[in-house]
Length: 302
Length: 228
Ligand SMILES: Nc1ncnc2c1ncn2[C@@H]1O[C@H](COP(=O)(O)OP(=O)(O)OP(=O)(O)O)[C@@H](O)[C@H]1O
Ligand SMILES: [Mg+2]
Image (cartoon, rainbow over all chains, first blue to last red):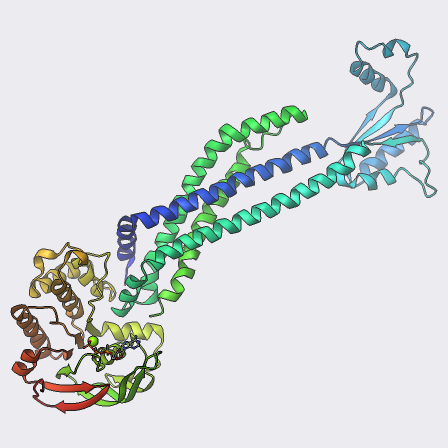
C-alpha cells in the first residue's frame, strides 16, 4: 500500500495548521546552529592564525667559515633526509650580507662593516614546528658539542615555547566551547520539538485508538521534524553567509595585517565554508528527525 | 461465532478503584446489546478494555475467538481497525476537519483517495453533517461532534461497533436517526454494543440488555428493558 501521498499531505497540512509551533522550532534551529557555525568558523580561523605563525618558525644553522664543500654538501643532504624537514635553503656568506644590508638599509652600522663577518647558514623550515627540539638536537654530538662544521643553531626560543603552549590551550578551550555550544543547540532543539509533540499528545493517542500503527503516526512527525531542522539550517546558512562574508572577513584581514601574515583568507576560502554549511545542514536535519523519534517514543505507546 | 467473550475479567485502576468485578460474558456475532447501569458502574471501562485503551487487571478477553490479552503493538492496531468505537468524549482530532476526521479511519487502513472521497461524504450525509464537512471540531456543537464520532466509527464497516453513549447529547429526533443507523449496521451483520442511559431508546428497541452495578453484571436479559 502506498501511503506516500497521505504522509506528504499530512505533513504539509500539519505544518500549516501548527504554524506557530513549527515556526518556533525552525527559529530555534536557525539561531542555535548559526551560533555554532559562527563559532566553528572563528575557531578554525584561530587555528589558521596560529598555524601560520608556527610555520614561520624556522631553524637556522650557522656554518663555520672554514667548512669544506664536501662537508657542507653532506650536511645539506642529511637535513633533506630527515622526516621533520619541510624544506631547506642554503644562504651563503654573500647572500647573508645582502640580506643584512637590505634589513639595515640607511643605518650607520653598515659603514662600520669591513669584509663579510656574517656566516653562511642553512635555513630549515619544519613540517611540524613543534618538533623543533628534535631537529635542533641533531646538530649536537654525544658530548653536547656541535657537530663538525656547525658554528651555532638558533631559533626564536623565547617566542616559540610560549607560543606553542598558548596555541595548545586555545585549541583545547575552543574545542570545548564548540562541544558545549553544540550540546546546548541539540538540547534546545530537542526540547522545542518535544514540546510541540507534547502539545499534540492527545492527537497521537486518538490516532492510535482509531487503529493507526506506530509508524503511521510517526512518519508525518518525522517529516515535520526533518523539515523544521532543514529549514532552520537553511536560514542559519544564509545568516552565516552574510556574517562571514561581510564581518568576519574584515576582522580576519585586520588580524592578518597586525600579525603581518600574508594570507589568512580562511573565511573567504570556499572549502571551509562549504564544510561548515554542509555540517549545519546535516546536523539540522538529523537533530530534527532524531528529536522527533525520541520525543514520540512515549506517546505512541497507547 | 463468539464475537466477544470475557472470562473472569477484573479491572482495578491505579488508585485501587475497582471498576469491574469478575465479569463473564459471551456476545455472539450479529447481536445488538445495550449496556446500562448508573454512572460510574463500569460501562466505559468495559468498552475501553475491548479496544485495549486500558489493560485488564486479570482475566481473559477474546475477540473473534482470539485472546487479545498479550497482543504486540502492531496487532493492537489491527484489532482497533476491526472495532469501530464511538467514544463518550468523542476523541476527534482537533486539528482536522470533519471530513478529515472521518477519512482518517480509512487512511489508516490504506484506502485509496477516490474511495475516501466517495465514502466519507456518504457517511456524513447519513449522520446529517453533510454541510459541516470543512468545519473543525471546536466549531461544532456537542451533538454534532458526537455524530462525527459515530460516522468515523462505522465508515470502514468494522465487524464490531462499540458505542459509548452515542446519543447522550442528542435531541430525541436526532437520537432516533442515529439509532436507525446503528440498527441498519447491525442488520448487515455487525455486532453492536451500546452503553446508554437513554431509557426510551432501550425500551423501544427491546434488545439484549446487560446491566452493570458497581462493576458487576446484575442482569443479562434477552429483549430486555432499561429497568427501574
Ligand atoms: N482512569 C481512571 N482511574 C481511576 N478510576 C477510574 C478511571 N476511570 C474510571 N474510573 C472509575 O471507575 C469506575 C467506573 O467508571 P466508568 O467510566 O467505567 O463508569 P461509566 O459506567 O462509564 O459511567 P458514566 O455513565 O458516568 O459514563 C468509576 O468509579 C470511576 O470513578
Ligand atoms: Mg462512561
